[in-house]
Image (tube, rainbow, N blue to C red; front, side):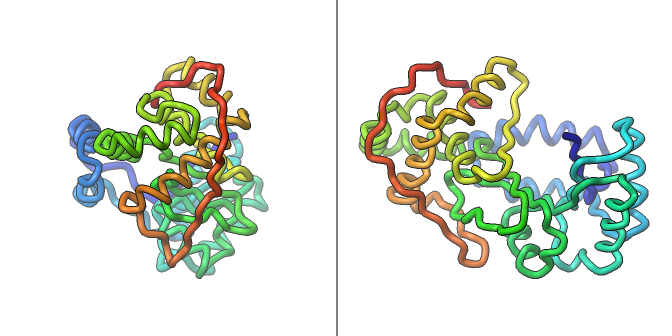
Length: 274
């Protein structure tokens, strides 16, 4: 499948963006709380689209030429908000579908913005992409939309791992309940990815890795029912014991997965994070 986004213009100062990423990535891994401030600062280097029909058509044609394809499976409006959306834009998207340039379109924004758009402008939401992890309170309940989640690890993994390291009694209790050692980075990352897959079992769960062995291992765990149940149980344990870590849900949406009481150790090796 070929998917791309329209909504953020190419950065005006590419060399500064590259430098900022090299500095920001290790900083966010150590201090997850600074992510929002760094994102706001980076906003000055990357311009937002006007979400006009003319700009959308030009961006789509440029993407098709760059990707050397006649169509896209999915085109997402990147970082759009309700105020960006209107009849002319919607009609342009539908016309692109009729012309065969795109098969589906949707929204690719932060969870709060995606939830607001779904509530106010559902016609733009055949596909919804946003971040979700065990630290999210968001209930993945969007009837009529294909939900794509990402960032199940990223800054959430070091944050949860650090919290477990600071609360060893809780870590031991969770390990007993889950039947595996949550103090292990490989196992914790595996369970967090499995939790994201289980929470969005009817949709698509994205992960990023350049390591072929990790890609194979992660693809395997997406289908392993034991690991998926353990992941769902981890999400419930986070909700039960680590509520202070959870991010507020958009518009009061919330979810709580049932806790599985009995597990056996998985026999296969756990992938490393990333």
